Length: 189
Image (cartoon, rainbow, N blue to C red; front, top):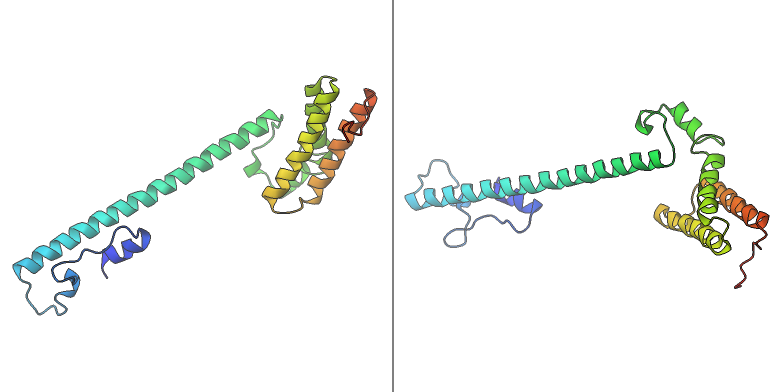
């Protein structure tokens, strides 16, 4: 097998070395009993050197691609851990949870359950608005857009827990608007 041909499959830019009349050096002497000429031996050395360089280049490229993926994974992991900290989660690392512990976290009253998640989102909007009607409306619209974006990323309708969380979040924001004397209906409509 010609190494540069298999390497060429990984990187089409690096092709097997051709010599002389367009015939590959590896095809010059098919029988081991035939003696190579000095030119054929030099051509074979050149092809081996090129194949080695191609193999090394492609191995390095594959490894650096893998390292980049690892770096991206590590950054995503750090971002996720930062997010968990930002929302106040101080429990066991998510990857170390048992199935029962994970189920408890997403149960109705669990940290990531419907009640606490919708409360965190609604509180963010309500507290951020500081009683300003326009900011409350903008925050409410932002919540709806955020859920819509999540559905697009998800590739369709979100799971029921997400749908219920969204509905409860909007309900809490609407109640806060009502308590402040603002109409839930948009004035511009």
